[in-house]
Image (tube, rainbow, N blue to C red; front, side, top):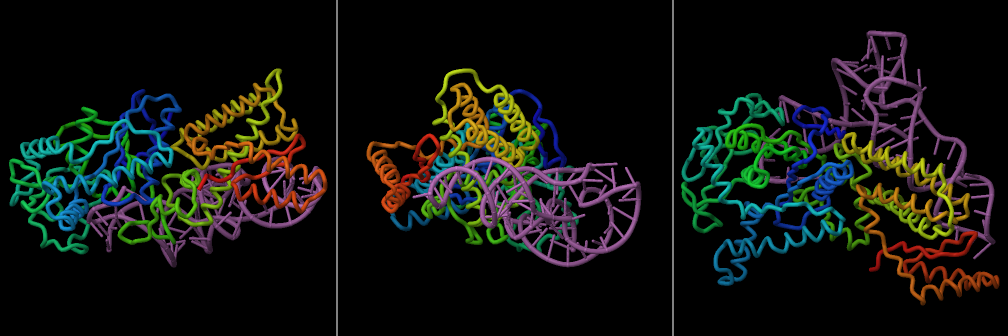
Length: 478
RNA sequence: GGUGUCGUAGCCAAGUGGUAAGGCAGAGCUCUGCAAAAGCUCCACCCCCGGUUCAAAUCCGGGCGACACCUCCA
């Protein structure tokens, strides 16, 4: 049984049912997503992987916001740069968001995020959104004002139940100019935004306009899942107002429950400040890869802290993560090499492996406790390395297989082995190694060490063991 | 001003009433031509003050400090 912290109740609750419908808030494709954004998507991935490992069936959607102020501005800029190239602004919008959308999917792949089942885009669900707007007007909780439609917060008595904001106590107007809004109540939020002909717009009963930000998630969840969902994820900054407004819209518009379990992951910090586009203190995945950081290291780094805790992004933390990844890869390859003997599997080790697998799954089942799960992994690695030491790197095939299966089990959630540099040791490398060992045997240590350096620069580390020397790939090809 | 989260070793980070997981770095040792890898050993009384309790890092109260949300934001 999986227990997950629910923002709604502020306590851990069991996840019920065998088929889980999950919706995760995805990116706005106006730019490259930064590593803080990816924390949220990898968090969704860990959730997805953990549930599957635990035997649940999962249907998981992650949206792409491809129409909002920023993307529209981008589209307008495109048309100004190349007048006449786009048939209309919607075409320009599609042209503007396409590369960022592509980059987003490529980055997910780079980070070995398991494919989600659905990736709905806001622009593809305009009719569904307009349908929701009409439902809300019919129910009397929304009103039109100058071509825009607003949600009347006062009509929802339990508004604020997720974020626990008390709108009465909240100062309004302190942080934004209330005069800019033509709303009955400053707290009301926009469902449908009147957009002049000069902007990206769709036709509606209220005139030309485009959807408000919160609307897409409600409409797409309804369209895709045809009913309430089990889990909804996102970053903590979405709790209010985004998720609060989603709840209001969906519950009022479609009736009944909306989401059982709300999960929110904390922010990634840089120098103790939230990483964000507006603050400018962000790194995209591409930035980091260009700096020689490896995606598996980034993954490990993000998994090393619980999702509900803020983590500070630093070179130091990344180094520590790299050491963890290396240890895993090293053991994996050591296990591969050690599969040599026939005979029965080591019964003690088989038991240890089974225990470790169970413990690993159990730690994750407790609100996705990846740090504890990693502790289990490291304890297991120590036992496995001890065994390999003791057996001089020669194990029965069955035992080596046990080791690999266990690492594979961990990796069903960690997702690191797939990103391991491929060894591909060709004849040239083997020859260098042979030459080095010949020099070593001839006590020509200067030459031996020089060859070791050469191999290191080629991305291979030499491991000298009692049973011979081996090469281990330590770097991804540049 | 309102709301919430957090403060654990040099660093990263679990634990949330029963006497401090795990990792990185460091020190010593084994192995090694040297090194690397691996193993073994060592390395914290949990921001401060007060309270509750047989027992608190863990609960309560009060400080101090950090961050976040209340505006677009993962």
